[in-house]
Image (cartoon, rainbow, N blue to C red; front, side):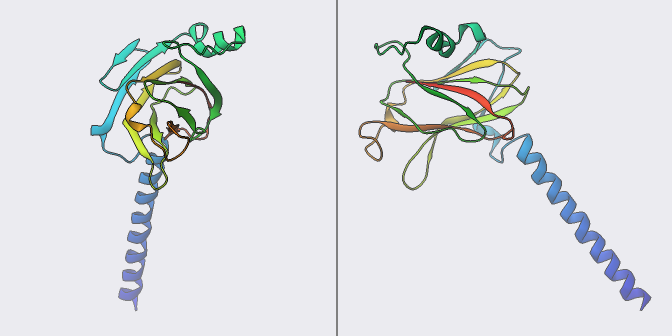
Length: 186
């Protein structure tokens, strides 16, 4: 009787220990890093870098006074000239932004990151069956304004949604309990 009771306690204890490890792993994934391979992640620290240029994106740290969104709102204009960023809109984002339509060329997202991070971002293109990742995932550290300028995204323009436009949204993969101000430009 004592042997079976002791065996039962050991078995139950190992089950609880196993469950606690799984819960700790799930908790760390939900707040610190997404569950994707680190080979597909680009790291950027706004406190140590002013700009990072890759084949697909330019990341710039910007001062709030330099924000295109703030200038546009202050002046009350939305320029529609080629070579100038057109403001599509802005919102507070907790996990996934709204869908923003782009006619191709370049696409920009300005973000006011309020946590020091790292915070993981992924630009996505909405499709009927499975959404496409646009480029790599970006891990941003530092509490500042920054801009992600995606270059040459015309390949995502299709006829699935709005004719001749790509349907982009920004996925914030960590720190989902805090809303970040984002502005979207085409």
